[in-house]
Image (cartoon, rainbow, N blue to C red; front, side):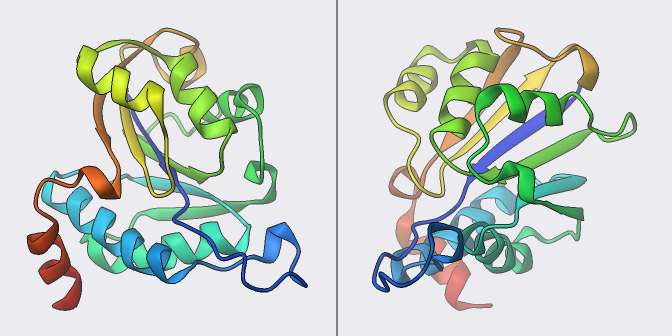
Length: 182
């Protein structure tokens, strides 16, 4: 049963108007949120075998800040095609995940990530589905389980296992201590 984690990049900065959208770095809030979310992932044992990450600066920085907290070094692929990809393009990428990969993660952008998770989820905790449907903010994480192998994954075939965003973290003070200890 493949597991797919969709991790939206953390909050980016708009402070330098000379930068292209692709080159925008993380804002201070994003630099804090990425490792906090990764610490949550490690505690919840949400550590992928493979991470496929957009090449946009804010996505790469999210991954760089998250990796030390994940506890395990997954294989990493950087793919420019994920930059602002729509749900159909993201799904095609998911369908090409390696056969032996049990858990893959995409790190990308909205609106494609939010649309994709809404398309893929057919079941799961109704409260989590409602919260995720309402908003998929920066540094949000959705974990979806499938009964089909990667090539067979499609709309409505997934079960939402977890949904978390920085503001939803159960114990912010404990998460902050985890981050500061690194």
